[in-house]
Image 1 (cartoon, helix red, strand yellow):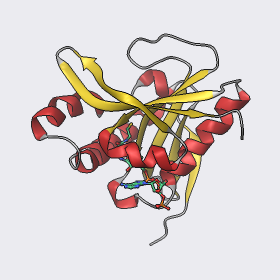
Image 2 (image 1 turned 135 degrees about the vertical axis):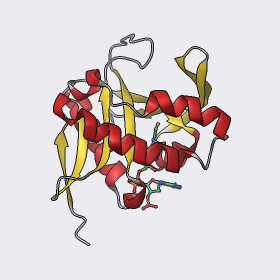
Image 3 (image 1 turned 180 degrees about the vertical axis):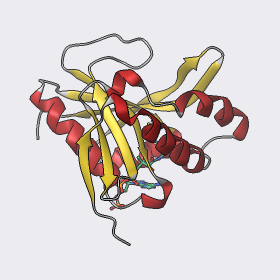
Image 4 (image 1 turned 90 degrees about the vertical axis):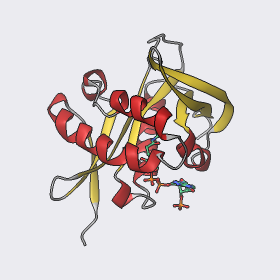
Amino acid sequence: MEWRYDLRVATPRDAEAVSELLRASYPRLMRSAYDEEVLAPALELMTQAKPSLLGSGTYYLAELANGLLVGCGGWTPERPVTKSVEPGLGHVRHFAVHPDWTRRGIGRALLEACARTARAAGVTAFECYSSLNAEKFYRALGFVRIREMDIELKPPVVLPAVLMRRNLHEE
Ligand SMILES: CC(C)(COP(=O)(O)OP(=O)(O)OC[C@H]1O[C@@H](n2cnc3c(N)ncnc32)[C@H](O)[C@@H]1OP(=O)(O)O)[C@@H](O)C(=O)NCCC(=O)NCCS
C-alpha cells in the first residue's frame, strides 16, 4: 500500500477530518494506559478538533496522497487550559497518529516540524502534557519527565498525565 505522506499546515476547513482522526486514534491507543471509567469521559472532550489550533498556523497534518489524514499535532505559545504565556516556552498540542499508521515516524516528523517553527519564533523549550501511553514517544524525542499531573479537562473530568519538557536551543 502507498503510505508516503506530506506534512502541511492545518486550516479551519480541516475540522471534521481532524476530529475523525482523533476519534480513530485516541480510543484505540490510549486504552493501553487508562481504565475505561477514566478514559470514556475524557475522550468525549478530547476527540473534537480545536478551532483555535486549526487556525493557529502552527498545527500540522500528515496527509496521504489520497487525502486521508494519518497524523496531527502542533504547538502554541499559550499553555493548554490556563492559556497563560511565558516568554521562550512553547506547548505541544493535540498530537495523534492513526492507529494503522503508528511507528512509521509520522509523530516524530510532526514534532520536528513543530520544533523547527518554534525555534524560528524564539522558543527555547517545549512543555508537553503527555498522556500516559505517549511518554515513551516523547522520551524518544528528547523530552524528560518533570512530574505526574492531572489535566483538568472540564470539571469534574480530569486525565492523569505526565508533564514533560524538552530544550530546543542547543540544536
Ligand atoms: C504517541 C503517538 C503520537 C506516536 O506516534 P508515532 O507516529 O507512532 O511515533 P513515531 O513512529 O514517530 O515514533 C518515534 C519514536 O517514539 C518511540 N515510540 C513511539 N511509540 C511508542 C510506543 N508505543 N512504545 C514505545 N516507544 C514508542 C519509539 O522510540 C519511536 O521510534 P522507533 O519506532 O524507531 O522505535 C501515537 O502513538 C498516538 O497517536 N498515540 C495516541 C494519542 C496520544 O496519546 N497522543 C499524545 C497526546 S499527549
